[in-house]
Every structure is written in structure tokens, then in C-alpha cells.
Length: 449
Ligand code: LLP
Image 1: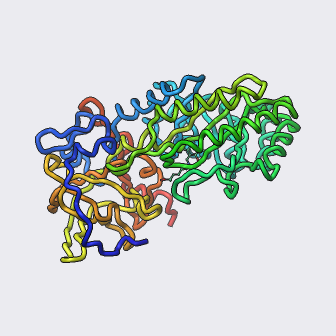
Image 2: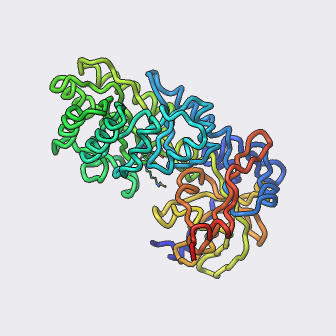
Image 3: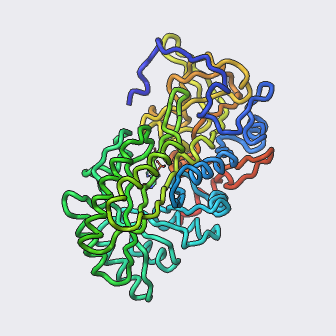
């Protein structure tokens, strides 16, 4: 994994907190020596709530949702991908902002319904949805189910006809386009467990099967190219492939897609040096290529859905930890041990993901010390940031790790029987605990002895 290779030549970047730009939440500011987000002093918040602690900037989340709504010169629906970060408070923001929600599986659907979200605005994903999950979705009245395999078409047909329902569906297509990102999160290539290939004839077979079976209404197509994508050209390529397939659907089966769901995937800045495409650039590219590619299909232009996850919430989030121990191994590296780790952020261990960090109580000082932030769990690979530049650390400091709003809480675990952190929303000077910290009782709840 390379985490423990000594790197005495690495240089601290010396940047100040505010020079971290797009990695920080929109409302982040340094007041005297402290980092504030949403008008809330993160050092005091850590004292009040304890650490590890997930903090989310509500204004940032709303800003990102609005940027998506405004980026397209098209009829567009923004369906936030719940797998990135989900709880009832997040669902309520989506409802207020007029957004849809993409759920992967029955658990995420249950959270949406518990928050009172309109099921007609839910899109259900999963490459092997169980009969129970499909039944729950159809009975709830979800807006769309994205079909991933032929077996599912028959299952939906049976469940829906038994209940006298006609369930709107999309077919998930593999456009055969490879996006440049981590291998674990590429999904649009031919060799993928997700969706139907075009070149192997599976997509056409899925269209035929969907049209033959009662109880479902084929509304269109879905793609998802992958995640943390920096270069957005592959979306244009995929639109060309989709338009050609739409033409075949139109001419051969008289069922041109009314809806095109382009999935999520836009990358974000985890490091100060990262320069992902912007939401506005993504919107412009898609607007231009939908119009170009579908101009010749001979059917009305489809309406577009996008399913961003990471780009809505990642930079809204920071995780607060307390420094408990410092081991300065001379000539090797300086380990700064924090009171969390791979249980609240698995991404460094899983994807070699890199994070920026600042000391929230020394936020006005230069980040001129090179350290490795080590988690508290029983794994050598339990590192949150290797060779990271931070202010000079001391035991008791509050470390804020940045860009942790996506795929951290939702991928958290109870390894070492660690209790999961609370989630706090901050906005206009107020902090609201929207998910409490787990307790030992929570850990024992399912244990029947
Ligand atoms: N739509 C579908 C069908 C998806 O599978 C995903 C993510 C999204 C939308 C949202 O993609 P985003 O905008 O967040 O890139 N755990 C990994 C990411 C896995 C993404 C899975 N699918 C990570 O931590 O990087």
C-alpha cells in the first residue's frame, strides 16, 4: 500500500489555511487563530460534541445543488446520489431545493421515506436489487427504477402486474467509454458488472424484454461513467453512443428514450493542487452535446437527469479529531495519532486517497510541518493523511481533515467496535446535531447473546 514507506525528502507546503481554496467549505474562514465553518467555531464545537466529529456546511451543499440547477441550458432534473452522504436532514435539504434522490437499495429508500420525501422523486439503483427491495420500491411508488439485468425486468413485471401498477423504468447501459479515474470506481467500460452492453447485443435484448413484459414502462436510458472524474470529455463521447442507440430504439422499436439519466461522477478538489472541471463546464458540455447528438435521432430531445453525489457534499464536510499522541521518528516520519481513522474514513486505505488537513486552533499559522496523520485502529494501513502539511502539532490540538463530506460517513464501520461519530450541520452560526454519536448500547443492540 506504500503508506509506511519513509519519505524524508517530502516538503511541507507551508500554505496557510485559507490558501486551500476549493478544498475548504464555502463558508470557511479564519477568525483570529481559529477555523470557523458556517459561522461556527470548530474548536468550541469539538469541545462541545467531542471528536471524531463529522461537520457539514449546509450553505455549501445548497450552493452546489443550485450550481447544478443553473448549469444546463436544458430541461434538467438534479437527482442527488444518496450513497455519497445520507440522513434525514440531508433528505430534507433536497426536498427544499426541489431535487430528486437516487437511492441504491432498500436502506437508502427507507431513509428517504422516513424523512417524508416524495417517492415519485426517487430513482432506485442497484445491480442486484432483491425481490424485497423491488417490492418496497414499487409499493412506495418510486418515480423510476433503473434496471440493471434481464432477471430484474421479469421481477419488476411480476411485482407490478400483481399490484396493478405500471412501473416507469430506465435501462442502465454500458456505453463502453472509459473515464480516467481510480480502477475501483470506473463503471462505464464494457468489462463492468453494471448494466447492459451495446456491442454484445445485451442492451437491445433488454429493450425487447422490457417492451414484451407488462407492468413496466420503458422511459429511457441511464449511464454512469465512474466517479471522481476530472476530464469531462468522456461524457460527450457517451452521449454520442447513447444517441446512436436511441436512434435504433426509435426506428426499430418505436420507443425513443424520453429520459436520459447521465449518472454522476464529476470530480472535486481533495488537494489544493487539484483542478477538476467545474459544474458550469460540465453543464455546458452536456447541453451542447445533447443537442448535437440527438438532433438527428428524429424523435423529441430527451429530458436529462444528472446524479451528482461527491460534488454536492465532499467539500462541504470536514472531520474533526483530537491529537492524542505524537511519535517523531527521526529521519523517518512524524506520526500524529488522532482519535478516529479508517472507521470514519476508509478512503485512504481503500483508494490511496489523499487529504489536506489543518489544525483548527492554529488556523492562522503556516502549515509548515510534515506529518502523517495516523488513525487509532489496529491496522498499519490505518492512515488518514500520509506526508501532510499541517501547523506544528501538539497533543490536544483539534485537527480538521478537509473534503470528507462524501463517502466517509456512508462508508464508515464499527471495526474495533468503534462507535461512529456524530454528524453536525452548521449554518449561520448555529450547529445542529443531525445524527448523534453511536453508543456502546448501539453496538450491542443486535447482539442477542
Ligand atoms: N449514480 C450512480 C449510479 C452511481 O453509482 C454513483 C456513484 C453516482 C451516481 C454518484 O457519483 P459521484 O457524483 O459521487 O461521483 N466510494 C467511492 C465512490 C463510489 C461511487 C459509486 N457510484 C469513493 O469513495 O470514491
